[in-house]
Image (tube, rainbow, N blue to C red; front, side):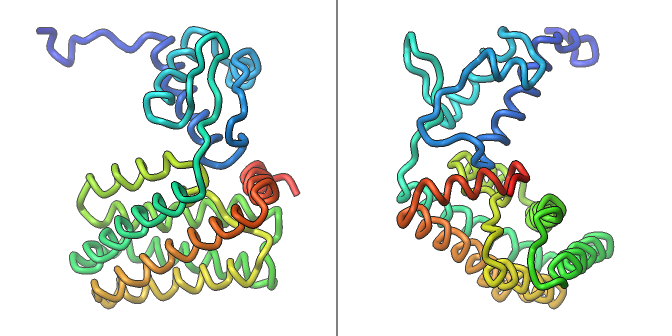
Length: 247
């Protein structure tokens, strides 16, 4: 067996496939493709700056993960998910992130983690202080939101929680990157949740932290699923525009 320190370095195709898989996964999870939409390999290769070989490897990997479907002689399409799938995935995510919040609270955040989370919540306050979510500020707000959730998952001290949370993100529109930006009341309530969750973490109140986080995620899931049922095309278009920064 070859020692790890003598193992050959990854080939360019392998690293390109990894990068392509990551980029396409992000686009899918952010809602940039419609359910059932065909993926054009030539276009993807040009956008991502990779050759067809690593792109095919990346697509095969995403199909194995359940994000896309392969149709013989027709290529790859974005997998179609029922609204029920999205509701169920949000339930899983809510329970996992709630558990992460409880574990993080009971263990206690260290000074660096607490300071970072306070800075993130303050950043969200500043972005929303104008009484609306400015379209130009959406990328910053989304980054803040993602880091807030990821910091808690990391502070839980259980790598399996993070792994399974990210697996639940394989259902498009379930990830913490999706924000229904057009309703300021919803965004304001969601960010108020961040402040309450942070206080529970600081108080080391595991039960309250768990309940607040679970309710926070469930609320987002219910709202999104209700919109998808009422007007699927509009909800998908809004999610896509929000992630791409188009308004």
